[in-house]
Image (cartoon, rainbow, N blue to C red; front, top):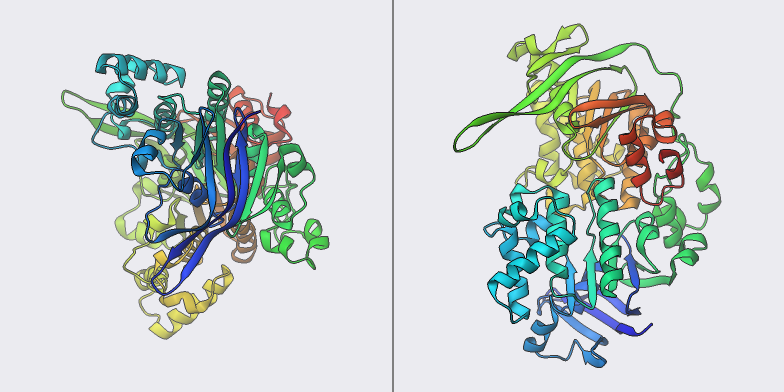
Length: 568
């Protein structure tokens, strides 16, 4: 195959005024035409900085290219991207080299329709009329399998689902038939079925156009589905690279081994998930697989019912210019939650998982049916009765940064529930209790006075867990609490939840679109589709022997799942 991109000894630093901090150090690799190269690593490993360097999208200053070369082979010509003028780079960006960004909502212009944005990309690089550009855009929307392209063309980004927005971004990236496509975490936090569809779409478009693909991700299981070769990055350096089978079957570097082992897919229930530090510490490695988590899941479920849901339906009232209509989010569901269990709630976006979870803790009112907590119908509780009950019912939200007040230190944020429910506790006692809890969630007591923006995503999620635990609740809802985390951080949080569940003895509902995570952490699983329950059973029954066609589709879509054949 012909060489398409070549990076030689590239070092990129960021200047803080006082010092230069290297983001990537002396990295070298190539991408051939028609090849898919995966760049793998955790947040902060330098993956996105590498991608942005290729297109010269890093602001300079503070970014500085300390050393190295980036060569792009454009129509048999060798172009040094670091040495080219801005006008030449504009001809290459979006035309010969295109990029799909991680978050389509922030990458798409909210005040322009999706069709206008794709047309704009075509008109910048191609000398064609607006009507031709529109026809080309509609063809692209059809090619990326968007439903009703004419209608999608007129819609704004906020009117589309996450998967649809990502397909619009792919259509925009493919609009000029690029030689190289850079896909920066294009499926992070998407449903596994949508993720599978986007991976298949990228592969299909690659075969049609013969382009090279640089696929950036933190998930080696995902890489197994799409990549020809893998480059593993850790703290700005390449620690290992090679063809996909060699890297996945015979990893050499401890960090690569850790990324493979951290994933819950196919892990035996009852065994603690290994984390990166286990592999980087040579003394721990022989004992990794043998360590048992503190709360080995039992096949016998406690029969004492904590919460009972009877014929529950929830409707959202939506308004338009000419009419009002109801949208049925949860449709006549019934189930029980047993004391001490972890109940997994799984399904795609729009299946009703989050709506149901919020209804369980009283954040949404049922349109019909009952939620019986203990001996009480929650819909008949007074405000005062709900206030007392909320002490025992908590939630950990999907986005810990959005759910934490940026103006409050984490100590103050965790302290708020105590001040509301136990105002008699003095300030010194409160701080002592919070310091102890921070250490329980593997954070230092000295972090009490820091603000949310000073923490990583995994640390903020632990803060959210600490805030939920401060009142020692009997019931906690975890709403997509690990969906956007690196696999190694995800493993840390899942281990932490198992440890805390054993110590604090709470009952949990764990909501996720990732069936492998739900299987690992749950005793029982409920599968939802379009507001209805389609399957219920023990974690192993649902994961290994699914009965419903929809569940089988979810299982088969789990990337790198060695048990996917059970779902077929």
